[in-house]
Image (cartoon, rainbow, N blue to C red):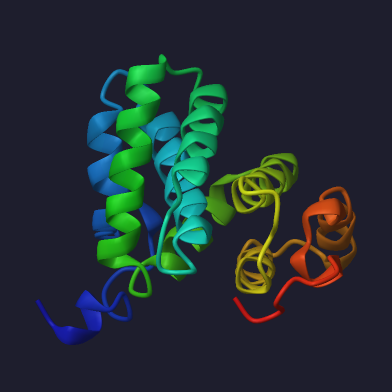
Length: 177
């Protein structure tokens, strides 16, 4: 395999043909769902894990929120949602940086505007699992929103729905986490 192809810069531009290992492993755990739904949910879970891991650790609280959100979004039993969440976290650690942009853009190409906004709300929910959205998490969510091609006004509206948890607005909260 060429380095360019490994980095996702060569080969086909068809999202179905891309070798996104992070998503494929999660999809395999969702073998009871239709393939398109499994890919959607796999990318969704991966992106949630991406924001949870941006500070180089995923807290127990963040893990529980990811599991709950994946169970709701995927209408999965708790055990399967936990498995998907664990795989997504592992894949995000293994392939983060390499596949983050590609997975998010693939999700963006298949999701409706409403699904993108719902994901944005879920990202803020994961980040606020400990009652504070750190600046680094807030910045990563903004980056993801841009990759999803969410307009700035829509991003701000969703962000403001979670403003009570924004660390930058809390007194005595370090701004550089």
